[in-house]
Image 1 (cartoon, rainbow, N blue to C red):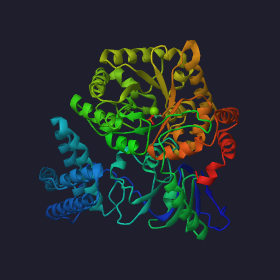
Image 2: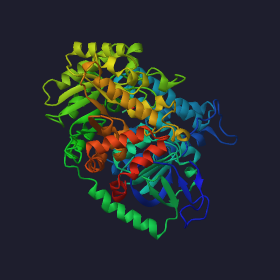
Image 3: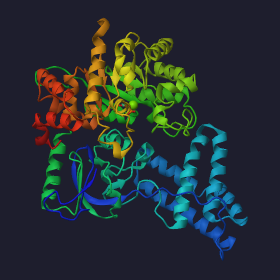
Image 4: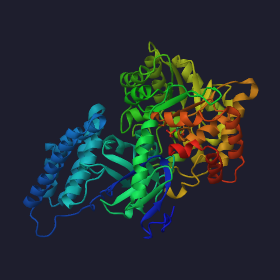
Length: 575
Ligand code: PEP
Ligand code: MG
């Protein structure tokens, strides 16, 4: 993206308008707050500053630790759910006597307070880690706390999502999945990142929370805290110092978004062709919300989201409880549960190696079965136990399958666990090209268009500069989807192909996917009503015509423009 100058007609300052990639619709106005820079590690061996006595340094450290504790405690009181739990746990750790005592000892030996707390926290974290179980998980909190104490000692903002008593637009480079635990949707009006692509986790999170979002908006992190901006999450624009036009657009969006919050629970085209609309969820809480939003089951349960940051394998009992919570939200409906997709941007310390040189192409998803055999089989056992006695129709699928042999092996593991409906995700181009062979062994496939796009285009889904390549509107990606559907009908198969990547949540692209022969779509619950409204405006032959136009377009931008021009409902709804 570039910084545009004066293209709105009202703004002439070259830095008054930014363009990125719109990834979640919505028009809002508000002041920005920047995500603080990561706190760098103090220099190894950093000593006490000349003229500072160890007593003074110890006092400074104690004051900083207390300040961090007081601040986190105050914030936890105003938070709820997982965010509150994270903040409470971190607050307790901040002034932990063992931690402070270890740091004081290092200061007495001449270390600077920053270096002392850094090293003391590392030792405490290692000790907790070695204890295993619940204690091992607290190691992450200790490492978070040390960054906060160092920030306090240096007088710089604390890391993580900034805190404010009033609503704000969050601006940063990118968000990690773990940041979301402390993201309060009542305070954050919109998300804007200078990096990240349409399939990045920032984009996924924004859509799940129903927050307008723009990614890959280069230069936007040069703005200062408090700057008032207008965000258009469909157009992908950010305008500094908005005027009367933008105020009117933001007010109109409030009305439209209320109308787009209602889905009647049946996805269908204008001619009555049924397209079940399911939801992507990360745990029981999401599932309950999705059921309330009318989702026709779950098309993707990202099980790794139940255990992010764990550094030990969750026990059978923990897993059964996590999965059962989701199944119970959908009695009588289909729930597609995906086995752990650890790795790349979703590391699970007990399963993946953070030092891999090229994690997106590394041991992730199903491939962790090569390096940690047994974890997958135990997870399938937990899924079978959770499914047993639940009223949901449980289907299970593996992520990152590349070959028919892998699909066969996975189907064998499912059968051994007593799971009757195995499937796989199609998110590696080799799997799309060999869908017919894969479907000899499994009962369904689900297209993971986020990864399918990054691998087809050889473009990291996290990287802002590659955002234009990294869109499922790319004709090459649409061809892979077409081939997958063709494979599902070859060799006498008649097996369902779904989409659970973010493409399904784009209402215009949803029409194209159905036109290509995709049977079901799964998305964040927030997108259900918008996708249903747009699907309901076309017949199947019209969707097929739009798919043919998109497939033969010369570029992703052309494909998107051609299809959007033929769907006037999008403009009417501000989508
Ligand atoms: C995908 O790749 O499209 C997908 C749904 O999986 P994830 O986004 O969790 O990698
Ligand atoms: Mg994926």
